[in-house]
Length: 466
Ligand SMILES: C=CC1=C(C)c2cc3[nH]c(cc4nc(cc5[nH]c(cc1n2)c(C)c5CCC(=O)O)C(CCC(=O)O)=C4C)c(C)c3C=C
Ligand SMILES: [Fe+2]
Image (cartoon, rainbow, N blue to C red; front, top):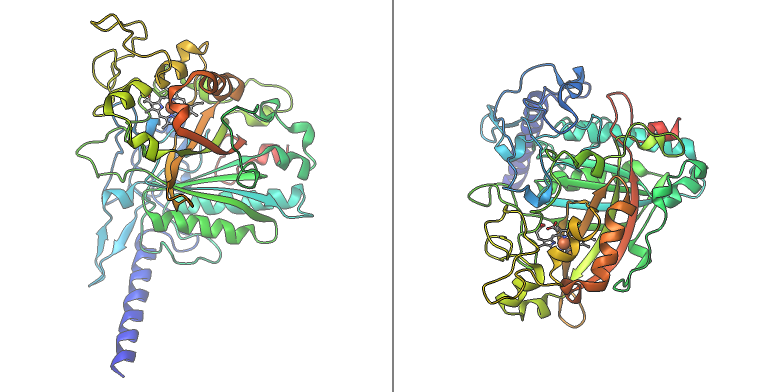
């Protein structure tokens, strides 16, 4: 009896919590979320503040996710406003309590560019690739992208999604959730759109350091999910997988992580599993060259005109040989990268954000940044200006047969054209990078990530209905 009473009490509490959360977060089906307080994501601004997101000013906590000095995890420029009025029900009474900063952070789904590219990488990430099911044609793919876009827009705004929900994130705010969609080479054959396949989707060349597992590469549709809460991220993943239904099947999935916001005394550039500050010299949205390097331009004719405002994602699972790396002295580790481990300052001097001086000599006459240092070989100056935006997640998938950690970087590089970004840089790294001895590239994919969409539209509509 007591057990039943306890269960009944729990159910009542859960019902109350769900009711209060739904009511306060504006997410009752068809209800509207509130306007993000600050929508200064690059390229979004006022255009984004569409009626869908503009019913009321956001009460409760507002929060601006500041970037690390040079951009946390290398991405930049994002503002995260208050969640769309997101409140969690007080677990004891029913007083709605404002969400914490982490829960309240939200990123708009609609806009000129898809979310999840120029914003800082979140604490939890899922990378997924789906293959269209046999017989799923262009129409089915369009219906899927419409379903997925609607769900992503709801979840990112903190609304309970339309249709069947699993309840996994019922009492959480959006937690800076982003969902980003891209198309692989094979998508265009499967949907009868081979004539619209961009030339930039040519397969990447083979690199000598590659040990690629095809089962974890490529795929018709690629999805990147990021959130500062693990349940929120999984919730999005699970819903998209359910909604794929008979149209698409998961081909591979990789799970990654980064530092949780608030874990450090101030926003800092993230560290990778080798312990280095990683992302410092990423292009920043405030750079005059950012747009041309990262976004596909508008004024484009031909097969890929539908890619305006989009970007190309190179996705690589790069395992780190951590046992070998950790055996190196600190001095050797720093010379392999070309930066100090403690604070990320270049070996040519200064602090983390001091411009790298590749021509600097040390007092003993040796070159300050060695010839095979990673930052020398990867720098735009060494690659005729080639640059990309690196927005990675770390991963740890347990241990290999020999006991070594199966861990490294889910490397995601964004650029307007891979032939002017990843490809020339990786070619150079392949030949002369001191870091490559400690890395194994285990999977690879290249995806055309269309521009964002307006409310009522879906990602990829210009391709699928153009
Ligand atoms: C093809 C491109 C690149 C791959 C692959 C890559 C892998 C990789 N990098 C690190 C760690 C660091 N990389 C850093 C800088 C850096 N890396 C690339 C490109 C690739 N890295 C570029 C273009 C740059 C910037 C160079 C510059 O202009 O200075 C750094 C230094 C800090 C920073 O600027 O981000 C680190 C650390 C790992 C561990 C890794 C594979 C697992
Ligand atoms: Fe690098």
